[in-house]
Image 1: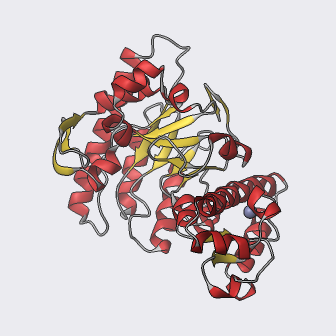
Image 2: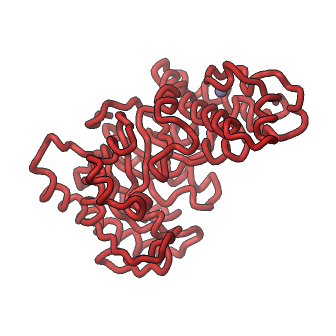
Image 3: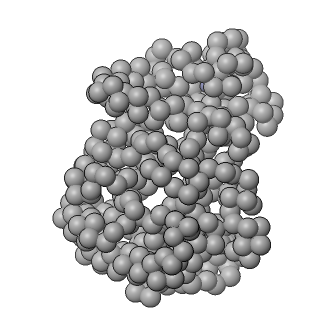
Length: 360
Ligand SMILES: [Zn+2]
């Protein structure tokens, strides 16, 4: 995939910088770990520091000193999960900030303008997310509104920003439709008729069982054009990522590497390691013998456990760094396996080791 700030190999994992930072890590370390793109949140940046500051800084890349591509979400998910007192209609969504209670309106058009000013390499249109479980009637209303908003977003971008080809920001469509195959199908088909640069599958991993997630990814990917990237929003844990790749998904984002890293859990090739546990007190092995990240190349489990028990900042940084590397390395290895036509074998071996936690 080619963007203004460089090309991206797929399938790829995108570290999440909710407040325009990958928590606890230097941007250079995230880049050295293999990140080709990062994700940031329109809703959060719009509220704090606000668009005035980011415009004056010269855009998000300059503000945060990140030279590689940035994908920004539309803020829709946060409006539905975080904001206070939402009022939703076909025009857009009115909400109160979860930070200070101030009132705002997001429309499909204003969300495109905000992402233009952020300078996002990949923009997402405003969409309506529903919770799980959700009735079919409600899911259908939200799906139709999402299509309508997608059309308005596309039109607005082309009419107002399309005149300068140098801008070259990409815009994806987002497929909604909850767990209903028929709705997902209709939504995907309608969006494919609009010439989006790629397609996201939204409203997955919102509490539904794994088999429902995999099924929705599979049937939606079948409708989407093979030559354009497909992005499964908010997915997921390492096994989910491999299952999704097998079903034709190219892009992933998830907060778990840094969230788990901060609370003392490492993802390893032999499953999860909770570093505070007493068996690691005198365990001088690295976190993961198969990992070549900075943490695994230099530090023992015993030292990492000590850092967490002493509440030292370095502990959460080293664990977050390893976790980010682990997720990036997983997609890097998946790319290699696909090239060598060995993805099924790679997935099988990875899952056998990963699920065999007795080895840790
Ligand atoms: Zn490591």
